[in-house]
Image 1: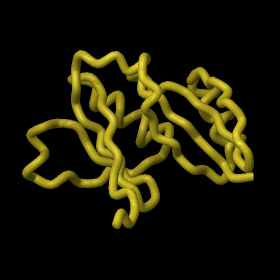
Image 2: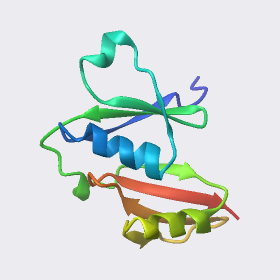
Image 3: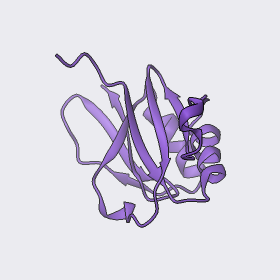
Amino acid sequence: MICSVHHVQITIPKGTEEKAKQFYCGILGLNEKEKPDSLKRRGGFWLEAGNIDVHVGIEDGVDRYKTKAHIAYEVDNLAYWRNKLEKNQIKITEAIPIPKYDRLEFRNPFGNRVEMIQAL
């Protein structure tokens, strides 16, 4: 039986960890979480998004702009996030409407697709 989602992983290009931390910790406000010593040599870093971890790994040779794979962050004030993203010159793509939710999409600075979703 699957109980819940423990973590998700996205990847960024080698050498962009500090830029990624500025985006995820600075703009999105996620907290960095200590990686186990046994995994630190791989690079990347871990984040906390509520009770789910987001693992940011290193991977070159990937065209992140061509995939639909994404993380959807549940938020309680989508208008706040729309405003914050626009102020940081992050291009928002309007998401296809779905019942009972308002949502938006954007690409992080590395091309990963990101969704923010709010229950109506």
